[in-house]
Image (cartoon, rainbow, N blue to C red; front, side, top):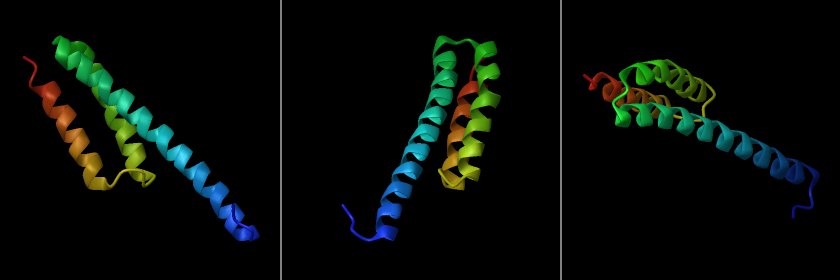
Length: 87
């Protein structure tokens, strides 16, 4: 454990940020999974309903710097393509 006050604060701050980032990444994965499950089931209505929510979560994470903007764009592109592939 650190002895200097500022170093102790950095340890705590880093842990708080890491926990927050982990929670947001997990939330994004959950929304993406909802879209994927609907696509796998062939349920176009459910997939189209879940898509905007997933895109919003990915965009929020990217705006907070948790995902790089290109990573966010790639994730959005992939789930959109999957939903559009449904007949």
